[in-house]
Image (tube, rainbow over all chains, first blue to last red; front, side):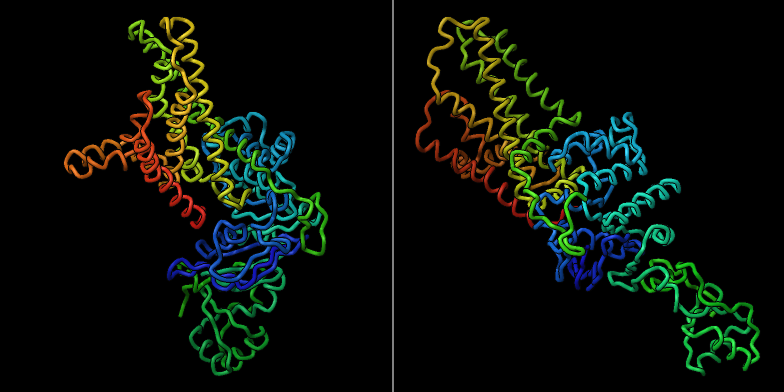
Length: 300
Length: 259
């Protein structure tokens, strides 16, 4: 279990992580989702003691990371797959950590096999690795000490679709055996594929959390009309607020309610449906204020 | 997941032992030799040591071919290379960003730094042993008649002090810059810069032995006995160029973020 409580990390005036709280539970894969620069990496760095929190705490299995003796045996960490000495072979990278943790070389070979790095690839220097191979090496590294908890920053970055499917199998199997997985991603589809729980973060704040299903349900109605401006007006008179999404609008109201307003005002609807199954809209919507690019530019 | 879960979500760490310091030192030694750059630096130190003794053997007069002269000849080239070794032991963690892994596996950063100090000292002593071995070999092969005369423990101690202080200065410079190029360049231009400034500013020249390591260490090379004042000068200049940058660098590493 990873427990983050009211965690804040500031750099001067800039607040990278702003009062976030969440729990990543054992037996589940928790996806830490947010656009680039949202504070995911900073939060993870604080969890493993590489950055000090400005306030708040992060505990791993009930302990501060720094208090865990030989932490590699309890917590597998992958923060940046490219942060390896370019001149070392893949196998040597794992050997150094295995030696530190006190593990036999056999364990290194097992992990290389698990992530499908062949013996000849393992003998190559990391400088010659593709990003995908570095990620596999990083995942092998995180699993080396047979930890109960995994903290992975953008582990799917650079993996091809087959690689992502492989990782999904690996991590869900790991979680089924009782492990806790926290993985970050800026790609919604990736998280939707892999995670059991989602923690969504934007500009250092948590904007939503829950299971993918709970995040989708209750997300309101999507509506598109010929007389768009009139519809917005009419809905507003009934106390229903709208937000522009694409070339339509999102409201918190039920479809029936929106339909009735449209009928009463003789407005021609071209689309009326519950805000749909893809978390995408929600993701874009929730992070709209926090995005570098303005995705939600529409009619109004 | 070999350890059992104590309570839902809690992990039992009571059976896990701390990583012993000797293991950390072993890993640091391995890091020095497992890249091409590191391995070649170690080979270079041994090769240059052998080469300088050979050159000295060929160009010196027969009477000068004493063990102490052979050993002394190795001090300068080793004095250039051992600090580089010390610098790289520290800076590679930052330059190659392996510090992310190192400090995640060992959250106590001071333990890693002290393990690096221990590893550097092991390598420094190994270099001294190589120097002594090569010098002895040269002496056996073609030393002067009294080649083994007047060798005291203090000769080894002074030679050892020179080499070890070189390694430690490298570590200190590595710690304060956390960047290989900056640390190496500064290490090599500082003595020159100091002598230029000292030549322009006579007040500095007068106190040079107290504040300049290059000046204060000259008696250590020359095989004479140091006076109390000279030992004091070795002490103060070492304080300025080794202890102080090491302390400041360590202080910063313990507080700064690992990027």
